[in-house]
Image 1 (cartoon, helix red, strand yellow):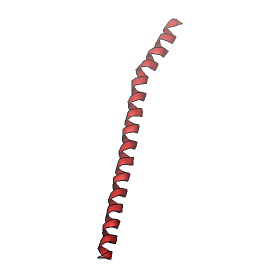
Image 2 (cartoon, one colour):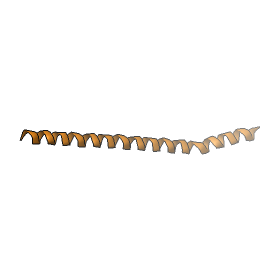
Image 3 (cartoon, one colour):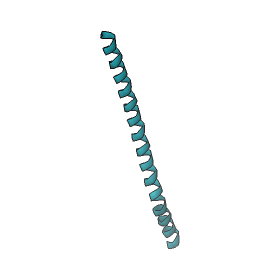
Length: 57
């Protein structure tokens, strides 16, 4: 009876780093997505500003 619980806890401990690794991967990917979206928006804003400045000249 005690072996069953030992196996259960062992399986939980072995699964824990995988979950942590998956959470880290998801966090890094979401940060990369947000940074790329911010960079694209910044570049678009800079180009619009440049076109507006050229139109005034």
